[in-house]
Length: 229
Ligand SMILES: NC(=O)c1ccc[n+]([C@@H]2O[C@H](COP(=O)([O-])OP(=O)(O)OC[C@H]3O[C@@H](n4cnc5c(N)ncnc54)[C@H](OP(=O)(O)O)[C@@H]3O)[C@@H](O)[C@H]2O)c1
Image 1 (cartoon, rainbow, N blue to C red):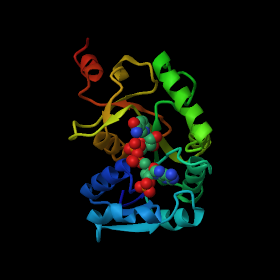
Image 2 (image 1 turned 180 degrees about the vertical axis):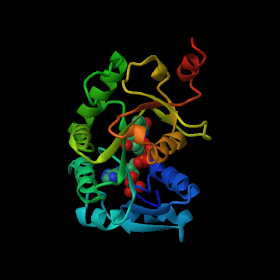
Image 3 (image 1 turned 120 degrees about the vertical axis):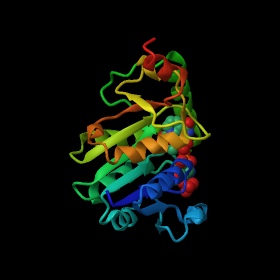
Image 4 (image 1 turned 30 degrees about the vertical axis):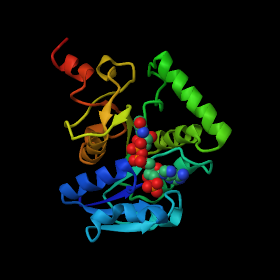
């Protein structure tokens, strides 16, 4: 892995991924909205920025050129198919052999085998309803984005994040194929470690065509499994 593109580099997750990628000595290219370029000032001179909407196909085409890996933050914001447009642009323009890593939340299911708590289902339904009503986000479009990724022949991984918190790194999160697995019960990951998992996935071929649901490695549920409890 020599050169990586981070799509959505200016967000919280994106900035952590930029740092992890630079720490590994990768050449880093970032895509973010024009108005957010200033959020990347601390990386000035160390990364190349392509300003633009992440679903702008021409911006993505130029940004991913020659990249061995692409890390994409999928967000449901807005009502212009932002998520699916972003995913499609990356799928269409990245090199065929590039490693493609996408972020989303536990609510995305690949095979319908995830088991969600009643609270989680209620929260997602309420958020989706409010988002549709106020037209600030399209959860369904993030589902559509992932449907297209799962159907693609590219070398993809979809990393599904739990609830997130800030704080120092605790190490690489643990993961499971399905929400509902006991190891994930704590439902909490540090954002810096979500980013770490995304960047480490670039070099982990065992994660190709997987949709790992992650949780912090020092959470009670992860520690309990490690101790054999
Ligand atoms: N927040 C959570 O608790 C949570 C839980 C599970 C999974 N996740 C997943 O984690 C990833 C990032 O989450 P995060 O909470 O850490 O957020 P984040 O890193 O702050 O990312 C937000 C991204 O959305 C962009 N954005 C914000 N408003 C926008 C708009 N109106 N139109 C277009 N783009 C907009 C931001 O770009 P600008 O910098 O240009 O504003 C930024 O790239 C996502 O894939 C999300 O599904 C989050």
